[in-house]
Amino acid sequence: MWEVRIYYKKGVQDPEGDTTLQGLKMLGFDCAEEVKTAKIFWIRGCDREEVEKICRRFLANTTSQDYEILQL
Amino acid sequence: MWEVRIYYKKGVQDPEGDTTLQGLKMLGFDCAEEVKTAKIFWIRGCDREEVEKICRRFLANTTSQDYEILQL
Image (cartoon, rainbow over all chains, first blue to last red; front, side, top):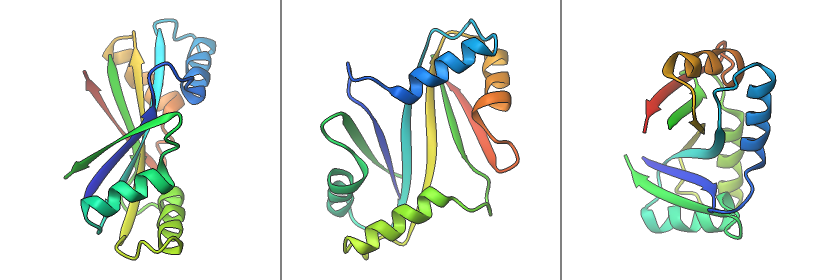
């Protein structure tokens, strides 16, 4: 089982994080200072090389996003 | 800094995981047997009790989703 994490590169806007932060402020959670997001995909099957390809071709937009692959 | 993970409860359909698996098959990644997804929110600020409230009221649909809160 592989855990793939997809997240925005440093310095790149994270639109869902920004929207979430706004929503929290509107709900009265003024404690929130920053929200960033990432996506996890748990993939069963495939070897690491295949998972690398899956990340680059399909899951990550490598212009704006980085990925990490962990074996669970 | 808090890391919140939102994921589908066991037995609940994960539509994005299912779609991703279909896409991988279409791209020729027949190695993929199962794909499940989760969302991460990294929240700066707030204490654990506030983050709990944020999860229950805003980030998770507790009918179909579970959440985990980790302090980083």
